[in-house]
Length: 390
Image (tube, rainbow, N blue to C red):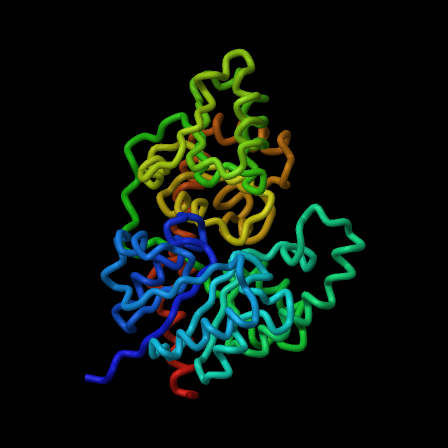
């Protein structure tokens, strides 16, 4: 039997954070362990990883603190990977500027590549060329002044990776445009936690519930959804709005609570908090709404469509790749509470349309290959090509 290759999956967030990047790295770990020995690079404490359900498939852990990125620490990480026998490293970034790549010479990627270890990267969210390399509160002139340095750092990063993966066609096209000299280095793979054979049968009856799943934050747009529901709630007294997820930004949650205090809404707009049964809620809900202001793809939306929940989303990021307007769901402009209210009312008042969108949406996820099996297979294909070249 040939010796198993040893690869590292590297992320800047704790794997226990349960955000989109962490969840997808978890899913990749689970899917790749049949082919490879796995090293985890993350900020997690050792005891937290030991308690994790996937601890048994992680052969080694390397702790990385993203707040202490420097040439010295990046070189040390590369050397540590080499000592562990790493034969390929895949770095995951929450945005376009991750792993210190906004400053030339700071990222670990060039140091890892210099040691002969093939490097891949995934950018999980692409917003704009000016987003992520300095604080959002900085004035435009400052961002423009810093852009050449950030662009040079990213180009150095890209020069040392075999491929950078985008999670949607929307993100892929932006990256290819911004970094045109190396546009051939970019690929796109749809991420998913869905098993192809796990699609459940349609429930006997869906409930009058509008559902959203995700961290409560302005980026996710829940306050706009709540405002939209408040506009039409009196017309549909049997419907409720359930918001599931940890509060990431208290100001967004406070805005939701403020709207909920209006007459007749206190028991109809519900902040459920973090739940482990989100998929079951999606099977029960009559409508799923994704009101995001920024979104790479939208895992929760993908999962809602998969279980046949008719959906509404905003025209941002990869959401239009999930929802085909007027065929598998409805699209509205981001931040448009009125447009969201009209879309909600249209579905809430039309059970036949909800059923039609639900059936088509479920089929579309499989048609587009948005499954764990396809995601893992695409990664293995890229990795094996790299091993054959090395």
